[in-house]
Length: 144
Image (cartoon, rainbow, N blue to C red; front, side):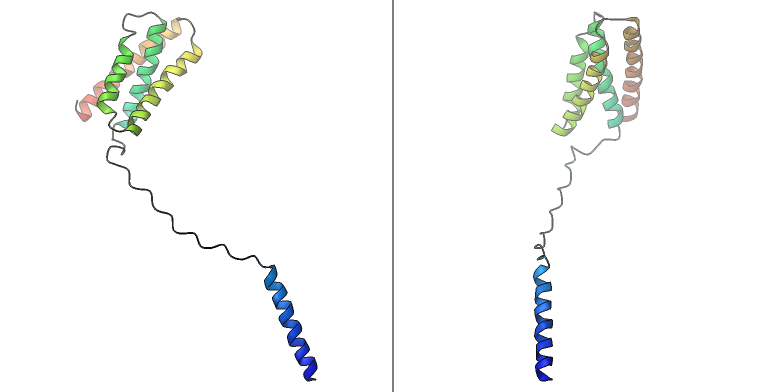
């Protein structure tokens, strides 16, 4: 009887050991990740950023369209964008966002227009009107 009891204990221990051998070891606990540093004040979005990005996109579109149509003010639009970048590009990230909006506006029309058409002239006229409204709004609400 004792032999049977001892044998059953040994068999149970062997079965438990075999079961434990099949379990995967736990991965070591990962150290807690460091929190990202808070954005610098220059990278925080200003309340007028949405309008400023739209204005940058408009300037990009006008840079392309006015040049395509041979307008006398064609060379002014890239200069205006540079002035905007100098005034508002207070950090590399902000500068990149403004330049990216300008490039989107420029490329969006460069893809579609190869020659100056009536619709290109109409688009440019609408952009000039929208840009003027945005400029007046930005200057009126946020100073400048």
